[in-house]
Image (cartoon, rainbow, N blue to C red):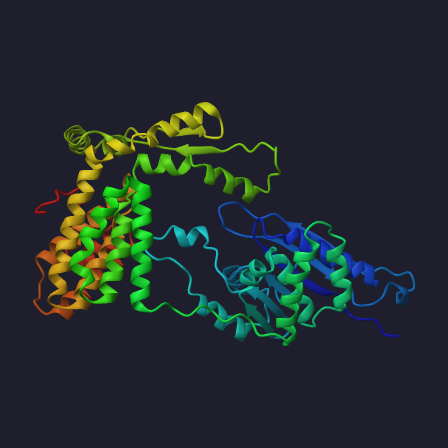
Amino acid sequence: MSLPERPITILIAALGGEGGGVMADWLMEAATAAGYPAQATSIPGVAQRTGATTYYLEIFPALRSALEGKEPVLSLTPSPGNVDVMVASELVEAGRAMQNGFVSPERTTLIASTHRIYATVEKMQMADGRFESNRVIEAAGQLARHAVLFDMRKLAQESGTVINAVLFGAMAGSGVLPLAREACEQAIRHGGRGAEASLRGFAAGFDIAAGTRKAPAPAAPPARATELQEILRLGKQRLEDYQGAPYAALYEQRLKPFLAGDAQLAAEVARLLAVWMSFEDIIRVADLKTRSSRFQRIRKEVGANSGEPVVVIDYLKPGIEELASILPYFLGRRLVSWAERRGKLDAYNVGMHVKTSGVLGYLMVRSLAWLRPLRPLSYRYREEQQLIERWLGHVAEAARRDTGLALEIAACANLVKGYGETHRRGKGNFLAIMDALVENPATAEAREQASAIRKAREAALADPEGKALGSTLGKPVVWLKPLGRT
């Protein structure tokens, strides 16, 4: 009898907490129980969602009884162009695999969930840095021999299990493995606790991959009015958490002039205003870093069992601007002006490693969060409110002329974010665009003005240093600039 020339190669990319190791164990147990030689290795991923932990398996599709005592030589690592089954627990991980050459149209069956968990590089962008999901899906259709793509996280949630069970079911249902459904289910049962829920998730994934069940349809986009109401609800909730009910009421008051107009503009202003009004200062950062929900999330992400200690060390580097931001207005303004005149804004940043999982470190950071009632008296609060009012006034004025122009001006709020140097640069870019293109436009034609604002904003977001924006505006950008009229 002729033996297969090569093993079936399987590469799994899973994020922390998704059970990638358990899935690899299920595959190994099912293959071994079926009598196939198999081998598995893993490469740990890195933190902060910069990559997944990968598991590589090879299953030789010939029963040991037919090998007459011989052992196949199996590899420990995958190689581009030689992967038969590529499994990704999240869509961009599938994109990484395709980019790295592990998905080929001659050989690879790609099995991936279409939901998103955003990578660090996406979150680091000045604006919306999310990768386009449709591009990954289109590439999968072109680069894979066969693609099985649907929202597996949703099915896992409906089944009360983790996504690994649905992925395992999709692998088995795709028909690319030499493993019977019964062998795979038996491997899950041997896993002990949670087996019944895992079997439900496995069955859902199997049936969709096998074509006996339809994949869940993606959620339809909400109606414009419904979307606006949802943004308003979330905005109020966010600002009540940030500074209390009176602050949320101020949010509603500021939005009133826009609610009777264009729904798209109202929704965009409501979204951007809620984010801007909950600006990040030391008080906000300290509050978020010391919430019990954060420590619970960290324990879950690292897979800590009950009673196991988890040490959390936060790296902080406060400077003059961070200190000034929480001082009373007249003191904060004087401190920033003094530092700016002497070029010392970045001269006194002090790096600190604070063990927030310990009592002293926690109390030190939490004490800053307790300053929340005093925030309205602070330098940063007053500066932000003046800038917000200036922005809202320009958006409202533009809305009376042209909705497209108003939307472009509204989108400029994306430039102002963060704290310290990030905030300083974003604020400088924002003010430069307001001065040059909103308050002193070169044209009175609304569409031309909107186009100029869009190009300048995109230049600022693409180059935080301000060089691209300076070229677009024809003059250098000044980072710290007086607010001017309010």
